[in-house]
Length: 220
Image (tube, rainbow, N blue to C red; front, side, top):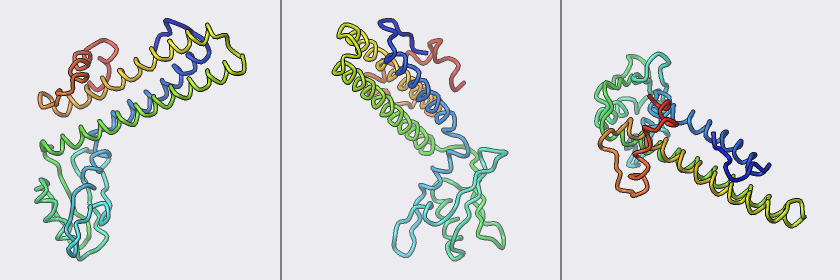
């Protein structure tokens, strides 16, 4: 995935291989963003006023995604006396098709279309995934550089070879970070379309890359 143009030493090769694992997990996470399973987290973030306290739905109920559709959920409220209040709160929070199932604590929620705020929440979730993947990539880079330093101290590697290895690691790490950021932009654009905020100069520069061949197969 990441070509080693400067040095194919064992440190650079190992970093490239471990980076592919980071990217693989990241892509899997991004593919889930916006799915029914992922949208559960948006529902869990709904706030319900209970006995004078502003509580997350997460504290009061379990949200169950239906396997056959991304638009239907069951909210199973833990306290029967709060079920009707949860229904009203959901309706007030842009989920008008929320209905209590007779004789149960279950509330059926049908998402006919996602609101701008819900799409924004999903895009923010993608941004969180991007931050996590970038953190993992940075940790990988620092760990590899530390191992090279230790090898120099123990004279396991020649200074000249270490120099080329460090340069390769810097280049590969930059490519990894850019790859992560472009995939994030592409996924957020899928949610927000022309409402995607490109006020950040780097994101504005990278946005033009989302149609390049290496990104074309992602999130069609």
